[in-house]
Length: 264
Image (cartoon, rainbow, N blue to C red; front, side, top):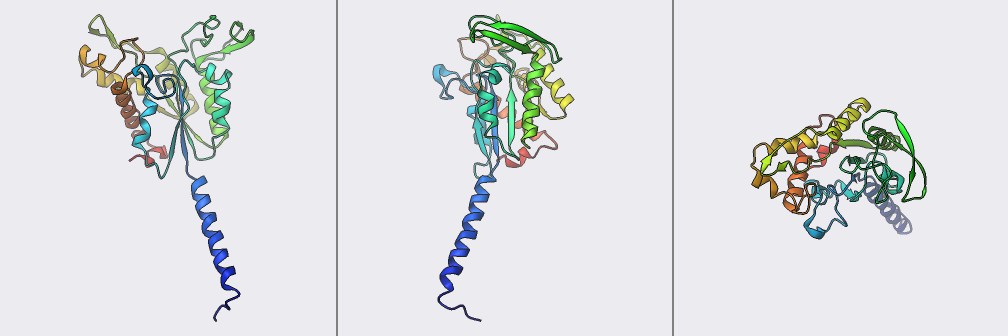
């Protein structure tokens, strides 16, 4: 049976609306990998100011852009505590949807004092339920501070509640070269991050170990080329690229995590 010419425009309009709806659904259904952390993930605005780069500036190149979006929301100077208490986490959490991934790496700034007048960003050492009420000289008010593990668990629970996938990374190692000698020591925060991830049964990338295993094959001069001359924590472009590749290696080893399906 032929459609009359009066029905053809309606049929075309209907087909166009169905196709448009499919495109919209496809676009909104595209997952996002959110990155949260400190300056070793994103320094400054992520543009290499002072030759300081975080690995989050380069990891996006390892993923298929037509299938997943990589958003680096890390901020230099933050700890697992201040990323939450300064409202940064609320902003990221509002964007997270079901099927997204959130990769976190904190620890470098958590060892700072709880209530110093410069930043007041430290957390209580460990992963237990301990807390301490302090006067925050920056915000000029009382604040209850918890353990490093408590804040990590808060991220994990919030992410799960959104139907997204949390991935915990242990912090990258600092420059292990001391007076020309490579000294690879254990990192307590790396161990605590792993303990929390195992207890919460979420994916964990032992970034600290992956990178240290690379350093074991290098001498002091070679390792120093990955870091800026300003301190022993921040990486330059070469170091950030090495760390980004290390993160990808960790993703590939996550047996049950579908994030690896989006890698190039």
